[in-house]
Image (cartoon, rainbow over all chains, first blue to last red; front, side, top):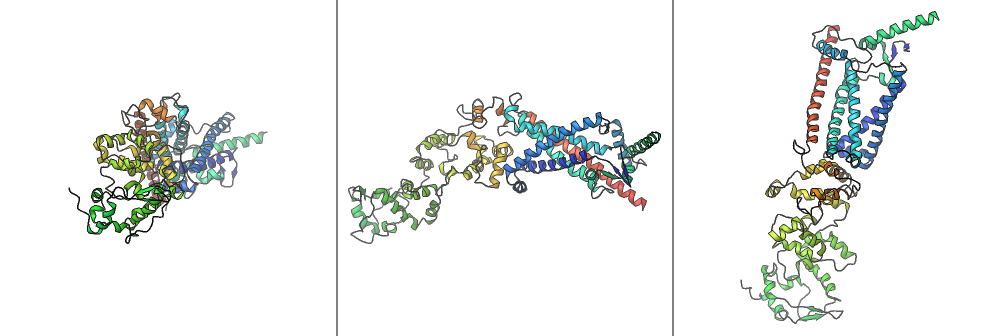
Length: 237
Length: 336
């Protein structure tokens, strides 16, 4: 399944790479059109809204981005289910007890209390934290966003107070999501020594073999044994 | 106080003009009274300050006077008010920007000029007493005046002689009164109301919240109105401003049973813009309150959750980021 091309290994297929670009664009547009509305009293907010051609246009772009974001989520769920069902992908993104022990192990390693870093599988605990943060954010933002677009319909079966509560959650979650991207994601995918300035793997789909060995040793070992098994199989055939 | 006898400069004029019968016949055959009530003239701001007849009537150099060219009384008034300009240049110039001047220029000769509000010869301070301002506007704008009189502001002014409440000019301006039906006036409404309603000292007297403006700006309607205004105040927005819910001239106390925003009437007011909403909808608006444990508790706890959850999450991430970075640097040095 994996083809070694010189010193690069395939990490993400085309669908996952496209998903990331769609997520990147829609998330950025949602931040740029949403945060200025949350912080509407600031002059910078007016300037950002003006870049979009005014509030009406900014809101149109925002709703299209939100629709894209929502469809992306639905597609992601369906495509992941398909990949897992057809054994093209594993459940490797699910959080496990090992992630907790890995995080603790990494913490000790950083402090010099452990000689070696924990050995990670396809996704390390940092990547899982970010992935599930996006899933959590997707659900919160989606539900509260729809509630704010349809307040009259929502209050037919829920108390009115749910609308300002949705707005509060939407705003709080927006700040959290933007800060997680600006800190966790920017560090791990851009600023981290060895990565700086840019981890290109989610765009090209490929990762240097050396990084694979260092960052995902368990997956690499599995790939090697799988490749060996395949080769044996083909020789016998 | 006994009014002074006619001053030397006015004596000659008043020897004729003190006669109640004195009048001139205008072009349309109507009679323009030329009588000056000496007693009231000397009580006026001008008469009391040594302004004599010919200071204003500069065209009168002697007797006989030049014949009046006016076709009718209004025609005369529309020419004569220009005399005010000589001394009151600033206010005269301001009126040129006003809605009244526009209407006049458009051919409506009933539009008011200086003397319609201030009178010609018996000018006294227009704000003494303060209700006189609104009474003056009410001369022409009678429907609006009656609505105002029924409002919390108007009632306080007229029944309690309360000088804290706004009279017409506080919202509409004085001489350069603009058209209040345009987008810019609408977009400026929240700031206009907040001039008084954000004033701690003034509102404290009546135990009215000063958070009404900030809470409005932070909510759905206020965000849009302020963003649209920042973009271009001349864009009309249908998002609610103060007056859409509270009323314009007929604003009532919020606990008045006839108020448009009292709980039992609120859903009706919401339906002006949100036609198909039910009784639970108005609670979607936090009624200018800052959510707390007792009021809008759900909103309060959601905010509290994020107030804790955001710093804990980001703080935890930053700990890992900094430690990871330091470890990388240390490892690199060791390799070298």
